[in-house]
Image (spheres, rainbow over the protein chains, first blue to last red):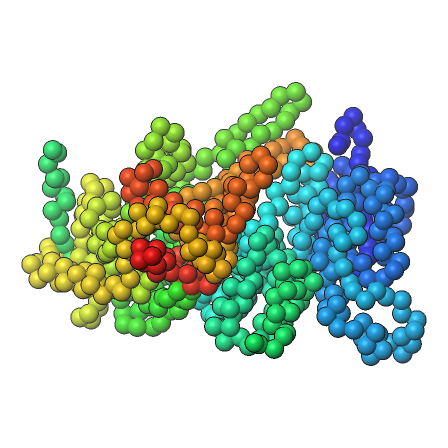
Length: 263
Length: 372
């Protein structure tokens, strides 16, 4: 992409989110100057007020679609972007705010806001992929800065990013981290969760909470049955699958199956 | 036939204090000593600076999907195998193969070959069998792996025979344990039932013999040899699991079978079994670049036949279904491995049973197939 001194234009867009994922780009500290040297920042409000008109070579999109305004704006961004990459649990699954998908959003608005009639929101929080074509998804809550750099490196050098969709367990085992679930009986989502965090929780003796969402071909049913044998009740199992990526299909179905009364 | 070297007949007894001397001597010879030690609720293989770091009085209680440590007795080696295998050191999980640097119109390639001299203390007989399988894969053939071969040749092996199997062990049925017959420099059998631990020492190599000469020892008596034989025979007898002998044929007879869909209902294809297996050796290669594209590196990383990308070829992944991935793993390990390497790919260590997050037991699955 970087031929004859041409600097690809990078844009960072925000939808319903906490900003943590775009902060990962600023968090690149040691590599930040190198990144800025290789791309032209076209739009990145968290870093600069300066704006360069589109179209953009790479758009990083953070956040989920949760308002009618969002649903319309994402199409404008797609039209201006050669490559569109969604970053983080909100953009790839709907985020923690997708917990409302399981209830009536009007009830929430009435409970939280003094004037719920001021609130213009959609019934569901949904991933960007449900609205426009997405070229690549970077998972995590927040995303891992090394994966973000790898993605930018790969995109700028015209190669496939090394961002595998296998289980978190592979990261644990390569690093030599002792399995928290096997040694303590604590319920760990690692076996069904997408690798990429760099083994954060298990290497601190905590089970995986699933920030990176479901891995490829996740067998959540088998893992949930094992949680049951470890003494977790149905409500606890439902909550395990219903957190950062509650709306990701595999996790949504698994949590819903633990909501219904047992037949 | 070459005559048995004289050192092979050596049988001596050392006390536990001599293990400290052994570690110090090996370190003085330039070895990094790796051995069992307690970390994060398990017995792992890590660098040791003295015998004080060995898991004295700690045993492991293992079952399908479960591993706990318990305080029990005074023995240094009352545990068996844990989550780590020696492949972690001989065939590291992530290895830089080379780095290329672009300088103007030139390309410079540096091959990276980091050679560490390891001494492994506490290698169990099943793991010796596993290392020998890796020798066939990496070192014996026409295309030897230089990193593995160099590390392997340099490695000093102190075996420890198993006087107490875990509930997940089945080495006796794989004919790989609980006693190491060869493949070591020194082999220890621990006596811990009468006070302070002592070790019967056997010698497997000339360098083992030279290393032993620097330790305080007494010649083993007839009663010492009988005591070791009795302990190891009892260990073999007390193994509750076994691999059915007809498993390779049973798999061939059931290649298309509803069984594979059934087991795929339990298997999470998380790949833990292949990561902890001491013989699984599959890797993937990743090329990475820096932002400028001037520096590129090639990394080799442990991979698994349970991952979708593992069978990715033009047009997509060959083994999309979890059932076909489980079948591939079991068939290769217990069946086609014989055709490829003239041995089973399983050494009976039981790691895949313990570290499977949903407790799938390969011996039980094999039994289902041989009966069906």
